[in-house]
Image (tube, rainbow, N blue to C red; front, side):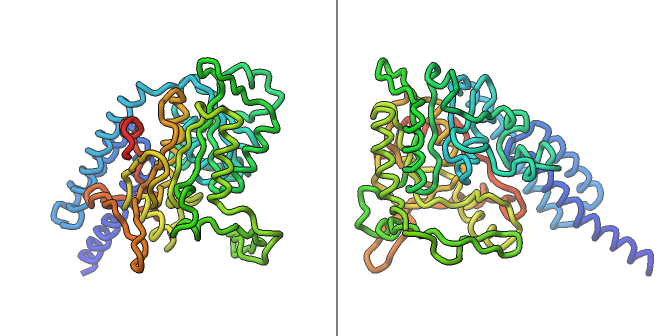
Length: 401
């Protein structure tokens, strides 16, 4: 009796332990398609097979992991092929790197490698960077920030006294998720007087500006609500999380869409219309600053990071919907890498919607098929990788009307 109980306990312990070890391999390596991942996962699968061939649930896990290995290899091949056409020598300066989208764009820019010069214009690369990354191993760091520790360390801080600021062509990526902050950042950059807006053969500095769909439809739903002035509020500490839910502070700021519209106008004045690329997002979702095993991660991050992995690119400002931050950051960085592209005004959406009278907002685009969604869970840190560069290039080359 005791022997049987012992065997059951051992089997039960094995059943719970090994799948989580495999998921840890995926958590640490899958986003970056490490070449060692398939081998490591296969070794774990062989252990499962040898120890419990009769377990139907483990067989299902084996099948699912085999699919992940195949997808990982395929993604690795695609990424390696597409990276060969990436220009890594242009200078990129980020503004708004403290936002969720900005952090992703900064990491993706630095993570490309090569001789790229990546810098931030205002503030630090990341607030409390040492405290945030203390004790974090290399694999986890790369998963969270989409670049290695060495690449992150090379990101510099720009200064108006930088001797090379006006002698080297620079592409500025504006990543603020607030129209008011984007507008202020544009004013602050102009005050630094470091932008080279030469119109000779397009040799001047370039601008990739994050903006928003609906600027030309601000009086219609749902954009009228989105453009309501933002009211800053006092921060209330709830446990370890600080939330801006206290009393109102000062006067409401300019509406989000109004702020983005003015930012576009100022960008064209500072850089010249031919040097500005406007990338319009829908309402931003997914890829928040933390990966937490809580309800919000399951409902929000899984919805947009896992369920909607595809991307739709349209000409100009004619759509509405939602945009996944990680894929948006990939688009911003790719536009900065190809500043000579003819793309000047695009809308980038992960979920395309339309507003129907009385009924309200309806989803037009289809979610990612179930097979591609299997195995991912943002609440456990198992996230789909960013959309690959080859796909981004194809979308930018043929935006939908």
